[in-house]
Length: 48
Image (cartoon, rainbow, N blue to C red):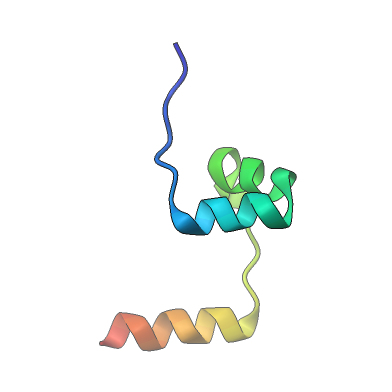
């Protein structure tokens, strides 16, 4: 039996953009590369 991963709206959108992107987001999270702008927005949200 395989592990079930919850399917979210963002994961559905990732699949629509590119099925390989969804696979990477679920199975190889360490390969994710965020831009400097994305990192900055994460920091702003974390401060709230």
